[in-house]
Amino acid sequence: MASRTRASGLLPVAVRTLGCKVNRVESDEIAAQLLGRGVAIGDEDDAAVIVINTCTVTGEADAKARKAVRHALGRQSEPVVVVTGCLAVLDADGLRAISPRVVVESDKARVPQAVADALGLTEKATADASVLTWGEGFRSRAMLKVQDGCDNFCAYCIVPYSRGVPRSVPPAEVVARARGLVEAGAAEIVLSGINVGRYSSEGADLADVVTAVAGTGVRRLRLSSVEPQHLTERLLGVLGSTPAVCAHLHLPLQSGSARVLAAMGRQCGPEEYGDRIRAARAAMPGLAVTTDVIAGFPSETDDDHAATLDFAKRVGFSKLHVFRYSVRSNTPAASMAQVAPQLRAKRAEELRGLGTAMRRDYLRRHAGCRAEMLVETAEEGIATGTTREYVRVCVRSRALKPGDVIDVVLGDGLIEPVRCKVAPKR
Image (tube, rainbow, N blue to C red; front, side, top):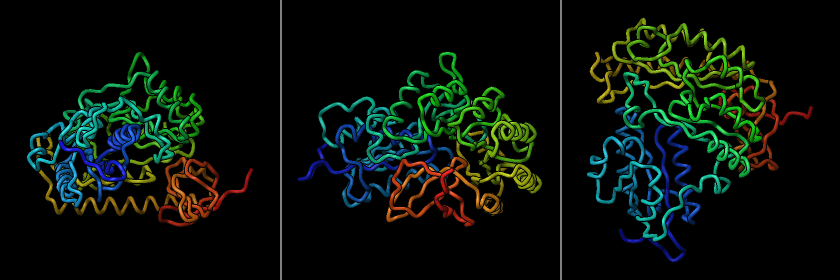
């Protein structure tokens, strides 16, 4: 493929991420490797190559991915579009058929070389520059992928087919990457994976990884998401006794109906979920719990939907992430009795309304409280970031910069980022 250059050097490469947080981690690693080779990362408008990291978890995700590819192809710079991610694994031929300018690379480790080929670069791409270049424009909250794959085979999910069986990064490699991130200035590390609770390598489990990463001296440590059944007493003991661990857990629920959860093939029913929440709150005082719920799963009745609303209220989540069920072909749920689209939308709206009310209640109850803020952006005298409890906050200051950690007093706003004041020193 012909090289793409201009007088000032290579045209930039843009990286776009769709889907989950693990995709974001992998996109960051791709971008970091390209930066390590001197390739500029820029906007899509004038990019010579656009990398699209796709998701295929639902039918809607497939449609969004293909739309993103077509939109990228329509840019005035006429870029080459390198498509990777889960949809690239499952439908490479379909993606290639969109345009001759589409390059499909299902192996994300080979994407930097695919970009280099599209740019006409002759040197081989470096194997891993992610740690070395993290400080060059990346987040002060660094996500560290420690696990991939899943074998839960939930009825609505295609991920086990696109991501494969569970596998984990060896502990020594995890620690080396974490130490590199800390040395590069990351104040918070988020341990991520497709099913991070299944971490298992060389006799180490997730509790061991938390302890080891905390030992690097990182200021804050967080789990991206963990299935409730994996919150063992051992793991909760480590989370609760490790000062770096943030008082926030994301525990997917999906439904508050035992019948629907069984139809989904979920491994944790409402009763066990409630038990795990109580154990987590006992081990981690001040814990904020966020969750995912699916509205309109096949065969869901009005009573099932009401059970989800009631269960969410009783648990007292700090935030709900609501997903309207979308048919994903080649999954068991696709052949089940479907809920009418209009009813799915109505139920999703009701859940989102509840989620908004619960988030506002959480913010209202914590107004005036002291919290630790990690600064992630600082522009025009306004610094924004997150608390340990995963609340988006902002404070007026021209002295703060990304990576700073300060104490703030939460304001009484009900919309994020919540305006705060710098807390007086203790």
